[in-house]
Amino acid sequence: MNVKEILTNLETKHPGEKEYLQAVHEVLESIEPIYNENPQYEAAGIIERLVEPDRVLTFRIAWTDDAGKVHVNIGYRVQFNNAIGPYKGGIRLHPSVNLSILKFLGFEQIFKNALTTLPMGGGKGGSDFNPKGKSDAEIMRFCQAFMLELWRVIGPSTDVPAGDIGTGGREIGFMYGMYKKLQLENTGVFTGKGLNWGGSLIRPEATGFGATYFAKEMLETNSDSFKGKTVTLSGFGNVTWGVASKVTELGGKVVTISGPDGYVYDKDGLNAEKIEYLLLLRASNNDIVSPYIEVFPEAKFFPGEKPWAVSTDVAMPCAIQNELNGDDAQKLIANGVKYIVEVSNMGCTPEAISLFHKNKLPFVPGKAANAGGVGVSGLEMSQNAMKMNWTKEEVDEKLHQIMSSIHAACTKYGAQQDGYINYVNGANIAGFIKVADAMLDQGVI
Ligand code: 2IT
Image (tube, rainbow, N blue to C red; front, top):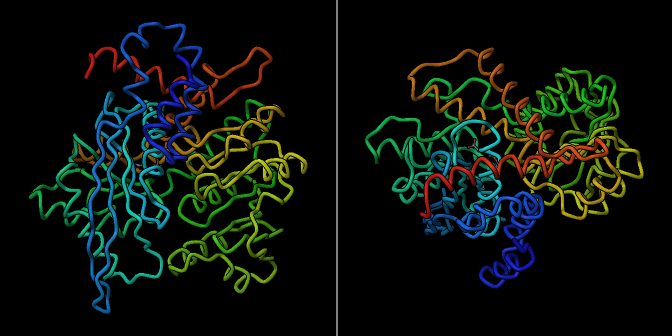
């Protein structure tokens, strides 16, 4: 394989899709040696087939706001690869959403889902609709209009959507309700459902808890722990909340959270009351983090800045793609950061990752760290198929096993001769081999 040539071809075919090209580039760089050692992959055109989604559905969504004004948004579902199971991945509702972003997310999802050990393919969907500042009735009308198109291409064994940025329990409820009405079927077609209509315990916590379990294991392999460590987080949504809860429980001190408006530095660290407050802040629907300092005046707000300037032991970006760039990485390194766990999907730019690698700092990519979210989605699918529910303890135990097995896979495929573990290579290679071998078994399709 010639990575450069493949990328040049893709750039010509898909000009301007920068996030998608970035995600493909990272995976190809990691798998190049394995690919070239195994000529059967090249002979079956695995890469050429893997980098193009199986299909993409794009549609217009028309909905009416509370004042009676009509709005039009674009909806998407990218069905990327179903070699190891039904397409599986969240729905992102955010004004930045475009085809490139959903293709990058769908592509990453293939490898992430393979790492979970569960039978799930990769997909992603969403819309450029902005849920912030909308009433519940507006959200409902949008979700129903979105489903009027999406329902045709999804199904419990075909394609199983879930939440992502902007899509939480409320949105999944409205989407599921409309699916049920159109399909006349009550099946596990979504994950992240409400607990009394098929949802799994621990699903809301799973992404943040899973990332923290992974980080804990990585710290332990360095004879280290979260006890007494300062931890900087970005974001203030569901994932940040889950990480903050678990890190605090393990003795770490979470000193930052952030929003589009800037970051909050709380030198005392987040306690149970402050973590609980994150839920209120999110429910306020404003997408700003600054109200935190009105409730907890001992904290400081830094408008328009990112939390990576703060001196910390562990940095865990939890917000959105490319939120931590080369300059941020330089600041973290200069301030003595010891570990970086990317919890957001592709949260770090290639420049940042290469700086962490050069400095031999343990860096975990999102597709390994945040796989607990989709992992518990897989467990929700199993429970729905069995028509029964596992207890909180059972799900949490399985989540632990999933994160542990991802850590083991990253170590197996990412360990270098000097003992440094390149988790990026580890995650990409382990995920790739599983999917590529399944594709080989199934012929050229
Ligand atoms: O990025 C992700 O893995 C998710 N948004 C969760 C996807 C899922 O299907 O649970």
